[in-house]
Image (cartoon, rainbow, N blue to C red; front, top):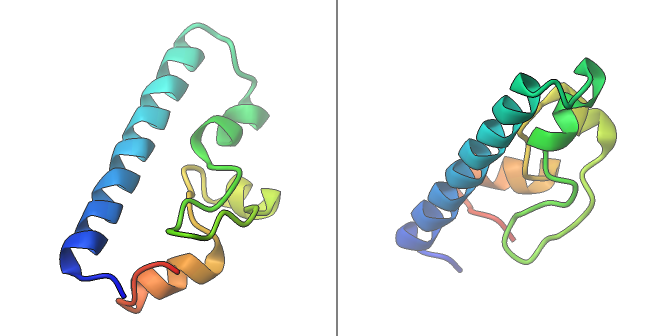
Length: 85
């Protein structure tokens, strides 16, 4: 079971990934490289980045929540304070 430091480290890493993805998107948009309907693909992870998970994240979730990096189950575990798998 993970402790507080592990959870803080996981969340910090997730925020860093989101920040880097946002920077990539900003650069691509400024260059005119992405169409409006494809922006969510750059921001959102294709597979869950939860510890030991790696399950595919459905396109609908990725489209509705640009920048998502966790599956529903892992996100719920974090919100309840349990960390990821």
